[in-house]
Image 1 (cartoon, one colour):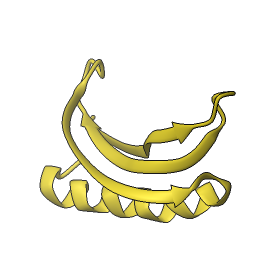
Image 2: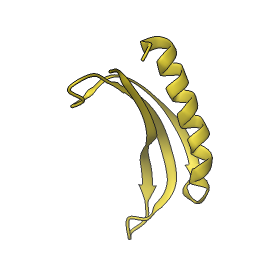
Image 3: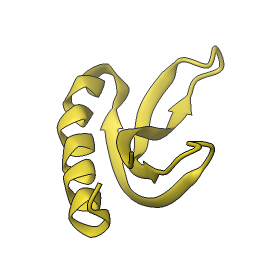
Image 4: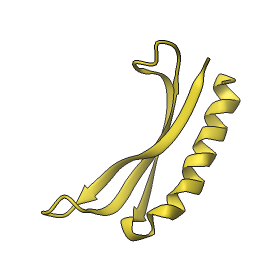
Length: 72
């Protein structure tokens, strides 16, 4: 089974390692045995971490775009 998933992939942290800004999101395709990405899409987003839930829509769009290319 081919699996595609997405998540925010990088953040700027404060001195206590709390995220301040989400700077990128990525979607990845993985194939059995699911140990590494076979394909990926990543984009800068620069979103405020307090509104991190808004990034979920962008992550879903990245999944959709990767599905169009990879046919998972």
